[in-house]
Length: 128
Image (cartoon, rainbow, N blue to C red; front, top):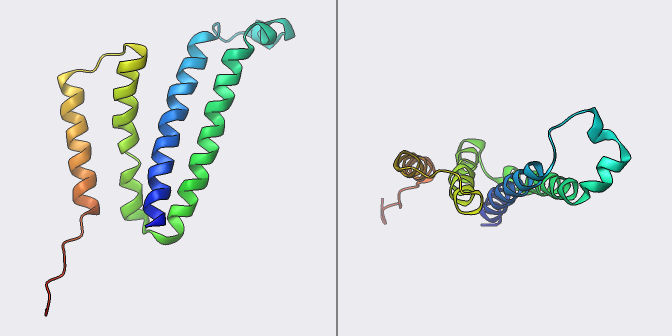
């Protein structure tokens, strides 16, 4: 049970990391040599902080992932990470006004179906 909670935490943290880093990167000017100037760093400290928080969420996600891998087979655990694709797509649509089309809904349903099929364990029959 703890392993599945670790996977859920990893998926949530990697989703948060993507969203926070997207926000931070959109607030930064295009990357150039001027960005390395101290005055530029000071002017964009909030955006840089968001990117660093996103990277921190990635690190925490990795820690959760490693905890999950101790007990779960990789062939069961790994497909669960694809749930983050659905979450990022959904929240990017809500937070950043990115498109969320019928194709994205259909694709998300296929991902959920695939994860369900891969992780499904039929119940054992009594007396058998």
